[in-house]
Length: 208
Image (tube, rainbow, N blue to C red; front, side, top):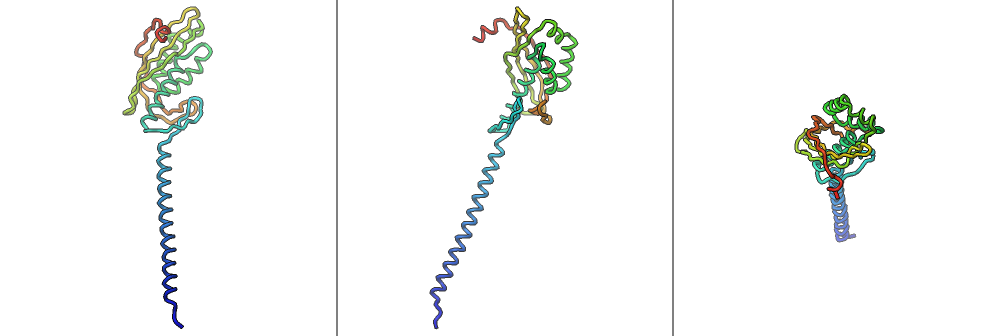
């Protein structure tokens, strides 16, 4: 009986085709898996989460870490200046306590100086309302500590009279450990200084 060589060759060819198909499929699967992992890694790197002032977690799509840093620095400065200068008889103790968490001894020294000068006693005695109207900051985030200059416009309501002022403050910001809810941005104000204060005339009419 003759051996059917032709059938054996066909079977070998079929087996080789099946093996090549399996190998190619496995290689393609590995390549696709690697590409998906790389894509997922890039998406993870380019996303960050920031804790908002009310404690909520906000996902931020970042173009760069510098932009993220600038957002946090500006938010920290606005938060601090609001706590430190937006005060009245009912909230000044709570707001000042929150503000002191955001600064170092330079902020504490200024607070103690104001207290010694009777600023907060007058707030209570005359039921003054000091309200922040606008906060604008310029920051340099190229190197730490980050320098800033902030202009805070606020009004003081004395009952029948309301005066508006522009206060310019300067200082630096450094990184510290995040502390919820006291310092959610993980930035500390240092070398804080009130450089200029001027009274604004007809501020509301100029805004219009």
